[in-house]
Image (cartoon, rainbow, N blue to C red; front, side, top):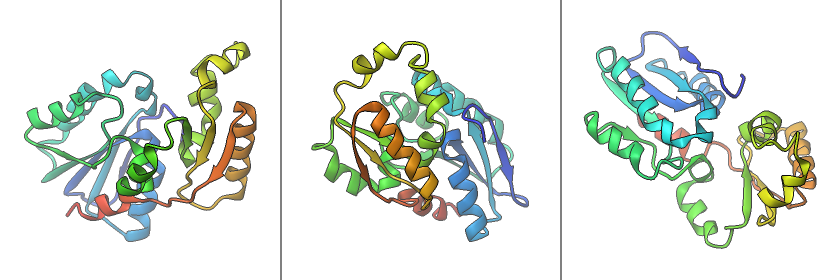
Length: 207
């Protein structure tokens, strides 16, 4: 699954539409298949929208309007994700559509309460989920221009002190890659297994 891919996944005749960030697509599909949630349809917006979070609210609005007459319920699997409350404003305007609680995927993957307990002490921490680790080269390294301007590394990551890898599944190869990324960024490394966190709970509640 490519970082910019706009996917649609359907099992049976869904009655609930999940509108999600592409960075969550693989995990959502895994959860649906594991739990045989045949009532759910999923449509994902490209993960690259995170580089321009101001575009997320209207992109979500278009998905809502495209699905309103086709589904009994719509649920949004985005945190605020840097929209400064604009995503919630759109959801209110579109009839009070609900979204998963939390500021971003790092929080609800870890569990919002658990993340909040860490966050004040981790303002210099760089987080990696499975997705961001898997697509680090394209989504982070190339997107920030570091493949062409290595001298910018200190400017971009100089205020970070630690990399926390918070995987959704246990994968030794992916963990090795996370360690290599930490070395490349000159950051301390910590492995903090999270699983699906609040994501699974939020999806399970959509009946």
